[in-house]
Amino acid sequence: MDGRKKLSNAYDMIIQQFKDRNTADYNRFPPFFIASLGAHYFNTVNEQTHIYTEAGMTVNTRLHIIMVAPQGQSKSFWLKQFLEHDNSIIKGTMIQTDFELRMSEAGYIGTIKFGDNNQIIETQGLCQEEKNSIVGIEEFSDLMKSMTAQDYNIGLENELLTTLDSGMAIKRLAAGKLEYRTNLTLWTATQPARYNLTSGLGRRFLFIFNIPTEKSMQDLKIKRREAADIQVSESDMFEIKKKINDTFNELAAKVDKVRFDKSFYDYMDMLNVVAYEEPLYERLALGYTIMKSEGFESELVISPDATLKKMMKMEWGWRKKIKQGTEESMVWSLIESSNGMKHERCLEILMDFGMAADDARKSLRVLEKRGLIIIKDGDITIKKKKEIVMSHEEMEQQMINE
Image (cartoon, rainbow, N blue to C red; front, side):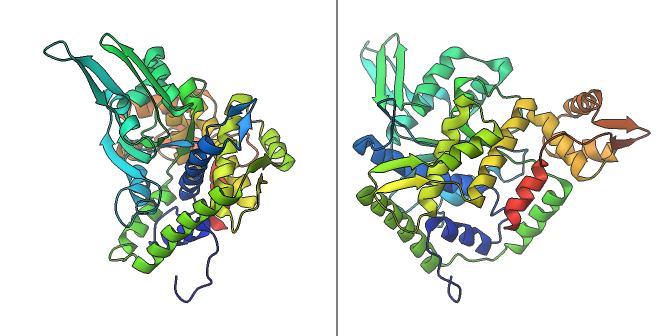
């Protein structure tokens, strides 16, 4: 950061670091992970001080994240940039981290069983081993299955839900009862599918939906090439991690009250956020405000600035698209961003994303039935624009440009 204006908050320093690394989308996806980091630390403080309560109960402010994107579209990349190695943003700070390639329900929660001599054997799960960590899991198949409509499993959902919500892990098996408390924050990723966001699990996650276009795919390719041989400055990383630690230490020492300004709820009402999703936006705003802070007073006031409003609107747009069906939304965004395209080229790109040819054709038929596209003589043309206040791509581009 030498030779440039000294940045005065952790959020800006992290964003600048990703810009220096020549990453694509450095101002698009990282803000949500940064906010989750702030919300994670505040939760550890709140568990002890109870300064943020609701109806007399201490609020659990952890902000769990699922990134939904086709294969090859930076899902693992961002988890690793924040968590995995010494040059990642969080590893080496006062926040503990872990990165796992894959995880089952038993590996996540733990289990208890009878041994060969009928003795009880308890095996700790990730939630217990890393109970104060931010954990990235590249593939969490049991979680994803429990959130898809066709594989809904209420028993599995309830076990996972309590760890993500209150932090209580409770599992009763033939050998006995497994019970403990965790403050783990979960970041994971998956490919597009049909998710049930009205389920308990769906409501506990902030969704990042990476909808690629031909332009974004080209930009990603160019950025990856240009990032070759870029070295990370050890002094910059030291300053970033020091700023994160200093921010959290000052937060713990000074803040004894949290208040959401009326302007925050006015903006949520403008978006028509449903009541059961409001806590997600509150945690997003809380974490962002902490990481953007340049000094704390005794009262932490949450009032949305332009960036936070755009983050909230992006999340609102992503959730809307996921509810409509991620595969159809992805196909529509691809076609819309190109203002129509050749049918064969569309199928080729979708198969590169990991969609089976039959699934891609099915999604195209759904869009045609909705009256959005016309497929004729080997061409796909747009019939009418989606009726939304601002297109999803415009919202994201506006945030990127600032």
